[in-house]
Length: 425
Picture 1 (spheres, one colour):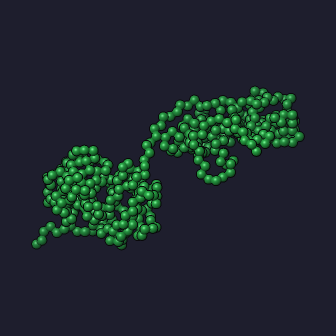
Picture 2: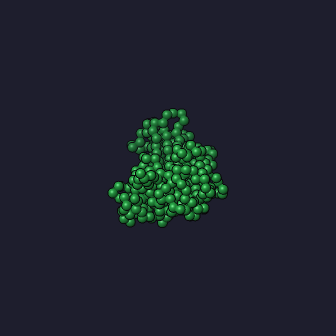
Picture 3: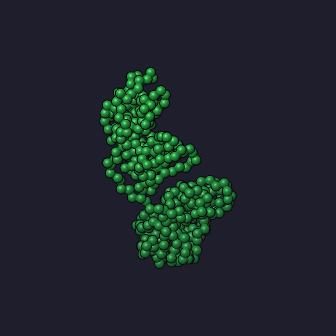
């Protein structure tokens, strides 16, 4: 069979066909959304949009009386309960970031008797989606009126998809049965249903593309910060610029069989030092040279003395390994360049970490702000000191994504370690 598309018009912005299926099933969403019919005429499949334009006039003299009909022109009307009062369409928004959106239409003059929900794998604008549901709703109301009639074989030119007019009303023929005469089944149509919608388009700003970049994870085996943590479980901090969304930590006892251990919702403040930090006495204010650091993202702020003494502005500094961290606090944070700060008026060796304080933390040491962006991972007490495999990456892309970082770490449970001896008697 040949195909004719001369009577088709419209624009398909995007269409998804994920499964191998029949041609009819593949075309069905397009026919529904754009109001198209497919009819067979003389061995040719003809595709054409519904317009409501009359292709044939009929009157009483053209009709054939059959025993199957109640009179020469049988009309019916469906009950109101058979017509949905509200129509909802799910589609892909072609104007923004290809998000799933919905368009709704309902009769304003009556309460909705039910909701008809459809989802189409099409990219549409907001006005196009609204036009589709408005057309569906209007078609459903008008098509409550149906008709059955018969035409002689001399009118074989009238067939499925044609719109005929009788007594001022228009009917679209949906079904044809051939016998001693053509028995036709039709539904009423109105050309105004197929006129373009006059709704205004909505200006939507598309979000910029966020490339799937690797994240920077840091494990911290820390002492108890608040006393409410699991003492043998380490913390993990993750930073990325730009932040890609939820980041997953997968764990396993070997390099296979990974399971999700923790989901990280936001970026931590991680940086490196650009100046050395000399050893200082714990328990007193360190008013030495400012510590210059450069952070990946986020902001730092100064805090008053009372706030610092109550735990504000806590930061860890270390060599990047999981266990070697000194916790200190700072009262003054002065921004000196983009993402670069000088930290002064410090409290050193907090929470017993004076025992691991070296003579100097060199340039390039890692710093992590100890705030709510840190999360403790799940680690059984029996796994303390045992090497385990961890993969950290964008949760939505899975653990096999090329940008996933793989680490092998063993944790001693520093939260179980007692403070170093202060006095001997």
